[in-house]
Image (cartoon, rainbow, N blue to C red):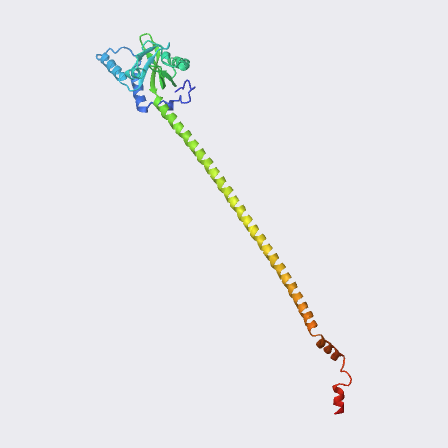
Length: 272
């Protein structure tokens, strides 16, 4: 299948929203609508009527458009979607101005024998745009119309709304994740700064404690030195004081060390 007018991002056959069952039913009905020689057998008109009834009751929106863009026929589902029955009007008049050239080219290429899919904006009554996708195949039709475009159209508006809501939820989720990530980063940075601040305070307290310890050790050593000097001075003063209080004893002791005086106890001993 050829894809036309892929200006819109979602203009792909896989995203048309047409289910396989509905598509098969529509194609079978459309194939039956191909022009054939009149049925000469009795009951031929009844078969054609039944076929028209089947097409009319199809849930898919079916529209026949001539090569010049005129609407030749459409079923009840298409009429309900449009809110009007525009048979005889130009199909591109039902489309937004920005998509008319694309739709006109699409219809012309289908009537030339190609098949394809196109997504565009259709204008509803009141001017409200609807996002639709159309699958089209060429169909031979009698009555001088030649090959026409048989189009199956699906309304994607609600799907696009849900898609937009899903995209918005995804964007909100990304935004929330970014905010949480930023908050987590800030919290980690704050905790890191607080940890560094506490470490710096602890290191400062340790340094202050070590400095006080060194000061106390120096004061202790200085006090010991002063006490030692004081004790040394006290000993010296004590010796000097003893020497002043007992000068004779000190002299006698000095004399005896030099020898005994004459006429003393030695003579007495000699006389004995």
